[in-house]
Image: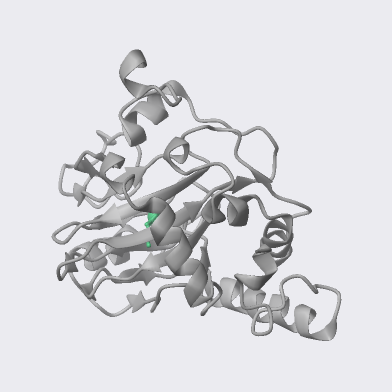
Length: 273
Ligand SMILES: O=C(O)CCC(=O)C(=O)O
Ligand SMILES: [Fe+2]
């Protein structure tokens, strides 16, 4: 079945950008990005599509790479000009797992959505880019983040300019995306406010409610965010679709090793280990 039947195009007319309704949708998303650094297309994937994708992932989720990591909020090396407890260096724990792209079957529904050019064109339009390209990286292009009960993603700013996610299964409890919109700016680090959030102050923190099927685009470079600990009996599952304004983007072997535990790709993992 064509992708246009898997996506709720009546509600989210992303394939009709040059009609009044498509134009209005782009405008609403831009307003959200500007105000909050994120937008949500609720119920973007139809229920049947979610079931298909979960079926496709059945049996491969165990191959996600589990490696608890501590990191500072900047996902950068610590800065020795600051103390260990300063927000610049304050350690956060992330222990969700990452399923690499080479476990996502070619021409599976999730891969077809990732490659679907109208989706890229729509997201580009909302972000003000001419066009967007899928990554050329065999591990990083599209991933599924797996959050078994007890796991989370610690407070951080993204390195990427923007992130696209598709919620496949929300947590029964917890697993909430929390964010402090634009808490820093390119010319304003604003450490005291960041420290207050790391210390648990709730004031600037908002939650981005998401259900299975929702598409989210967020700009996390200046927006501090995390995913709170997952509770219940099932893992939270969310696909991350990576695009770039340039074609051909690939990770360095070092970055691949950090996120996937290996720098190689391919079907026969044992051979190359
Ligand atoms: O799991 C999520 O909802 C988002 C994780 C995240 O912050 C990221 O991929 O940068
Ligand atoms: Fe992030």
